[in-house]
Image (tube, rainbow, N blue to C red):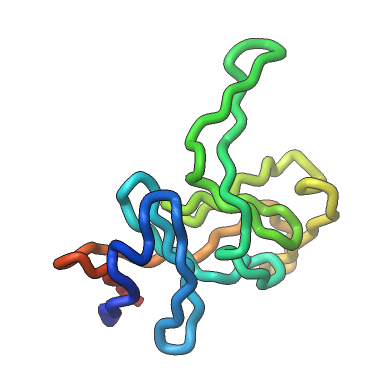
Length: 136
């Protein structure tokens, strides 16, 4: 992997994001509370831009009938079908028991079998002398 300077820290303040191109590949760089993360700017389901997606949170049951939001701003929702991805790991947050994500049918075949969990590609990020560096 090669290292690429993609921005200065001032260009991506906390809570912000920036779409960059590294060797012809679109990458979305996010700043979550001062920590930087990079994810391929392409939803693995249908290819929509994840950088254009809404930042959301994980909804968790705290007790019967009550829910709390955790990990605010750490999930990005694909603007096309609504798949949600953890910005830190690229892991999808689709419940495999659900047949739909939001309101659209999402059937994906991987190796001849239907899959309901996708993984978005992530890249290591570091900050060096106020520059955001992505390894890709």
